[in-house]
Every structure is written in structure tokens, then in C-alpha cells.
Image (cartoon, rainbow, N blue to C red; front, side):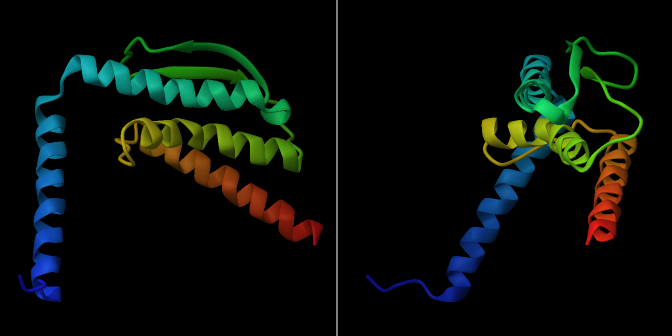
Length: 137
């Protein structure tokens, strides 16, 4: 049996990727409520785990997976207004923890339950951290 050439391998890879995309698209359009609850629970668990295990991450106040108007779940924590470098890195880790937990639990695909405002907030913390590191050098 002859080995498939590069073009055939690329076509098969593309077909697999397209099938996975269509599966995720169907899931997003139909949206199973039980699947969403599971996904939101894993997402919020990621935030809680990192809040609990990092000393500089702040204080965990509460977590909910009850859908509200704009969110599917919420993890509340207390943060001071002025942050040290350790607190900034811990905050960035906590904010990305939900997405990482989803990617680990669901095979590398995150639906990204963050709103555009949440993504902007993570980006803002990242740039504060970069500015702080540049000033320290």
C-alpha cells in the first residue's frame, strides 16, 4: 500500500478540522442546557482554584453558577486598589483560570465565557504588569 502524499494528508486533516468545527457550531446553535451548566461550573472552578491556591490572589468571597442577565456564572473576590507585582500576576492568573480549566476539561476547546469587557479587563491587567516590569528594570 502506497503512502499518501502531502496533499492527501492535508485534505484529511482539513476534513477532520471542518467536522469538528461543524460539531461545535451545532452545539452552539442548539445549546444543551446541561452541557452549558457543566461548562460554566468547570469555568468558575478554575477561577476559584487559583484564588484559593495563591496567597497574593486576594480573598474569595463567593461563586455562583446561576445565570443572570449578562453572565452564566460569577466568582467574586476582594482586591486592593494598588497592587504589587505578585498581586498583578496572581490576578492575571485567576482571570485566565476559567478558560484554562475549560480547555483542560473539554479537550483544548474553550467557549470563552468571558464577555468582551472581561477580555479587555485581562488585557488591562496585563499591560499594567508589563509597565510595572519595565519600570523595575
